Amino acid sequence: MARNRSKKTGKWKISAHEFYMAMHFAYQYHEWKKELTGLTDTSKAIQYSDMPKGSLNPDPTGDLVERREHLVRNIDIVESCARKADPELYEWLMLGVTNDGINYESLRTLKCIPCSRNTYYERRRKFYYLLSKQI
Image 1 (cartoon, helix red, strand yellow):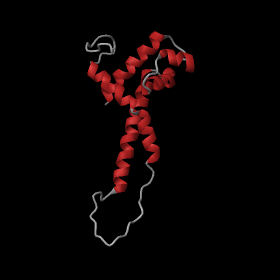
Image 2 (cartoon, helix red, strand yellow; image 1 turned 180 degrees about the vertical axis):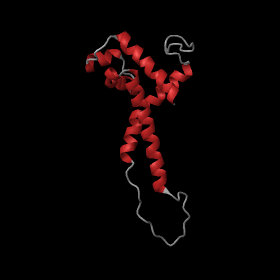
Image 3 (cartoon, helix red, strand yellow; image 1 turned 90 degrees about the horizontal axis):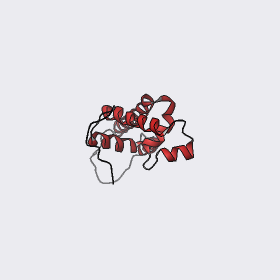
């Protein structure tokens, strides 16, 4: 059962809705990275046929550029918030906030996180606070 996060308490004050919006935004990080690596084709081969066609997309290259810029912007937001939350814990914060199910114990066991549980969760709260102000 999820904890009730409806109160704005503590040092990094965000509502439950702000928290969940930031959390789900960060979870999309790997999807954005994967999509960005696949968005490289700026031109398509011309298709010839006997039937005339109108174009629903008059500027596919421009649309591709806009999508790439959007993805880069979102990726940069997540990464910069993690750096601002704690530059020394950046690597571990990125693992914890962009992957569902990775908690402090996982990071301690598998990735030898160099801080206490309280420090990690404090920095994670700071990350979500910073992210909620950016999106």
